[in-house]
Amino acid sequence: MELKNKINLYISGLNIVEKIILFNITVYLLPFVLKTVLFLFNIKGLSIVNWFTIDATLSEFILKPWSILTYGFIHGSFSHIFWNMLILYYFGNILINLFGDKLVKKLFLTGIIAGGITYVFSYNVFPAFKGLSSVMVGASAGVMSVVFFLCSYNPNYTLLRAGRVLSLLIIILILNTYSNFIPFDSSAGLIVLYFIIYTLDIAGFKTFEQKNHGFPITILFICGVLVIYDIIQIPIDNSGGHIAHIGGSLWGYYYSVKNNNGRGDLVNSIFSYFKRNKSSKPSFKSKKDNKGFDQKKIDEILDKISDSGYDSLSKSEKEYLFNAGKDSDK
Image (cartoon, rainbow, N blue to C red; front, side, top):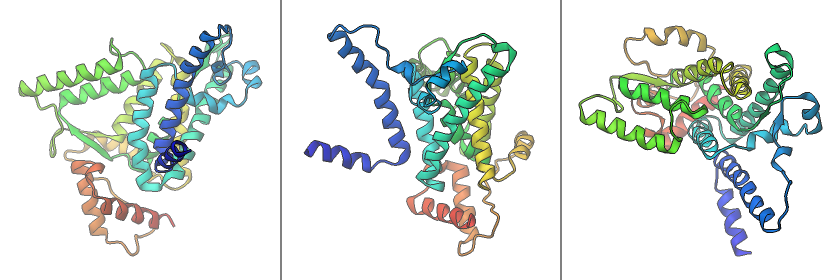
């Protein structure tokens, strides 16, 4: 009983992103435990996971309509769940600080559904998929929904400023999130990536984060790379997965604009992104003036984010920015 109370206390202390990650990890490990139990009792031919994956064939999908959501909690490999949860943890926590837990939960779950609908629709409409059977798993559509909501809200939010070499390596690592773009396992890739950057830095290349110089790695940049890559990969490999990514991305952007959280300047940001001669700080505009809040202080906080990233803010600064944004949406 004491152990149960400790577990409940631990879970209650987690935010929604951490709870989603914990649930996904639990679901990922359950089949391995079940497989061991079935082996010990010599039970063969039982596959429970298939009841929760989503099928592109309508006749199969109709038999398990719940799969439109459950597929998003099934992952095919360790690297699959690792990258999905890592990206969700980073971007999800940024979103929590801005809008709270409820929005992240809604975005993640509805993003999974949007990705599933796009997947089934595409396989039953486009001639290229006629007669093909396909099964899909993974939380990528839900994760992309969260990322693209943030992209719509503040496309010029700078994650870091990197030298040219690090920028290229970041792109490669992003692409490897969704496929074997580089010929080694993702965990090994991280180690190799670290030593490449370390070696280049010793050699004099400016590869690490640079405060006032270097290429700005913004949310818009990350999203642009992901969308282009997904579109290119549709006719090559994992067509359904890439289509679902796009479905989740579009939903995240639509949800942001529909709820007036999107700033409406995403298109302009795309055209102006490469025209900036110097770093631009993310602006904080809203439908109404931020009554009761000092705009100069907000600008100073945004300057700090632009220079050092969101994590450099103190707790009071995060709360001040969050409350200002909350007030502007009323």
